[in-house]
Image (cartoon, rainbow, N blue to C red; front, side):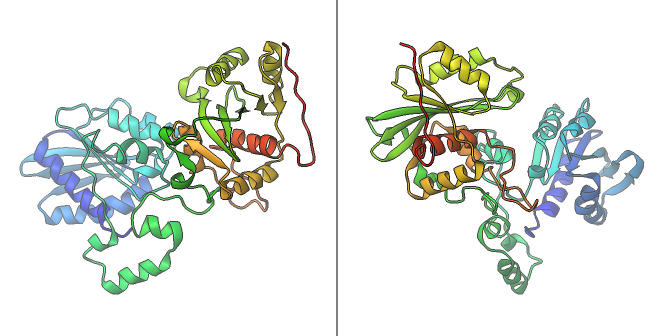
Length: 384
């Protein structure tokens, strides 16, 4: 924040475009057209004119015609505020695109803009303030910068020559915790509002080579979904600690294909393999899948305890007591730890109903397997 990255990149984008192309179209994208004009167009055009550019903004068409050194290029303005925004940029052929605050835009819009840059020598320009570590842009671009042939530049307030030492110190004192890490240090960090802030990858994630060699017990937890994702976790008990060894996660919205009870059951069998699983703890509302498991007769199907707030408390306690560990293979569960948040406002404690499917199967497991004797009991039978 206040690092000067937006102005630096905007001038660089225009200069590069005229060095590389003539008579070409480019796109400059922001969260909305209004914010794009405020953050980029208004400060940029006077500076470009001082540098010798002739700029003519056509407000009704959201386009800026520019000339410099005998060359002429067009810069179209787009707002990427929601999933429907991707349709606005379809069909264009671009020499390059600048996406300002790209982390605030939907992935579908960003990927459609990228797909438009098909001219030889085209380049992609991104800038943003950091978000949470599991954000799709961080995962797909920041962490894969070398793989995707990207120049990654980390800006901080120290890079802005217009800020005095007094102003720098003032900004540092404004923030603390995760906000300080993000806005002052420029790092991708989870902010306040996480349901499980005590979760630590360093503490709770176990490499495959460091997993125990033997387990005394195995159980599976399931959050069942057809339209919503289905999440199953395979757990092994070693000593007084449970390890999430591997998982199955099926998101029909991403794959474009819904699975039936029988297809999910076959995935459950593949997840378990030949291990002697004592029980499958399942979403109590998934009556048809519970019946499917019982009908096959290989595993005991157990309806999970589903008191949400009590379950969250039990999971938090187990994490603090270091009774839960997660294999590095459980990527979707680890991803949701950084996304699962409390609902803002509303006058009650409730987690958001998003990024919660692996978190639900985790909660079912802890509430039922670790604390199944607290005020309740369950029984299961298996056909032999």
